[in-house]
Length: 551
Ligand code: OOB
Image (tube, rainbow, N blue to C red; front, side, top):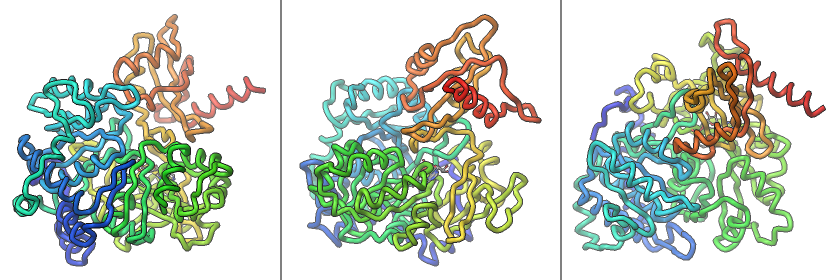
């Protein structure tokens, strides 16, 4: 079903991608049964004590899809999904793929502020949450949010349902009908492969967070091709360490490529080494993906950690800058090959190849997966930079959509007229033929791989009565790479503390990872020649002052 606000690929390109086999013209829900026919009795997903075969997974997903239809959800509807790394997430994801319902993949860290925005933007018809997570009552939050939606909005709960309007997600998996009959009925209502399969949250844009509509065709290709590049196959045991709603563990190559290539997915609730290492040993995990902040903890914990990690072959690290000196330690410490991943929810995926020279693996962020990926590096005026020069990466290709969802004004800036996505990343081609990320021009803070939009933070702080102007910048952080610092010009005579700022974020229900870790009160901001806040100069000013204090 067509959704308003999705920018399609130009028709002649879509035909080419289909004709040349980049896109295969089948929805993900169709592929689910292809996998089940191929590998029915093999284990598809392990979650703690639970092991589920490919056939069981497909049958659970079908049962759930049938119930979603009963709840009134159908092709063209969107739902908000905020779930931990569980096999039920996967069943729900696939159930949606059967019937054309597109999940908007939120993070567990998101709170009312983010969920309300996403629910409005995608006009969601259901919200799926755990009952509780780390002491927070997601069920209550979802019920409150659903109650204020202009249209009927179901709340599906994984865990203990504590309120009447909520639906127990597990009960929808358990009620079985004749699987064969159900299967042919659902086959008959399969969505179009060019329609939206899922919505990813953008980590790459400026201003309010945007969402990216990924189609069945493009996302299947993105995962399949990534899996080929990374050597995924039937013996792959992929450990899901990062939150499932992220593009990296979901489809780069992640969970989907593991299923496409006949491997086994192992769900993990927490990336902490003390949780992950015993599971790697028990399940003989062969590959996982990490952000640098977590890779750091693993490397620190591995020697003498007492766990057998010898099954690990490939450790993928991406999402934010990886220091080359630290990168060099990862492979030896974990007894695996490092693979750097420079990706984006907007599409383009770059990987170092397992057989690249060690030096390239340690120093570069890899190269695109597809011969149909186009990459252009441009200067501030949009002109291509000379060979070897650094420029903003622009990209187009078979899995890089041509616009954000329902964001026409923003799209006019984020995409060029001929459909290139402006990544906001400053990169260069290295002599090895791989890309190196050198910096960025977009206004965000990358905290351990979680992207935080600076204007979103500024809007919250500027609403405080003490504040005349606020600006948010990234400061270096030993653990997360970057942390959020807000700089404030207060009204005359007004006093403001970091605690007050943080309380405002909490009161508004903003995700914790976005809450500023530092506050700087200033008389004025340095400005650029055109009168905008000069964030680079501001950052330098604060770092220099801090050094002065330390000396
Ligand atoms: C991944 O996706 P997003 O959408 O959360 O963030 C994309 C942005 C990129 O534009 C870039 O600024 C940054 O994150 N980034 C990196 C990087 N990988 C991503 N910066 C430096 N080095 C890297 N290796 O972060 C993502 C999606 C799929 C796979 C891997 C990461």
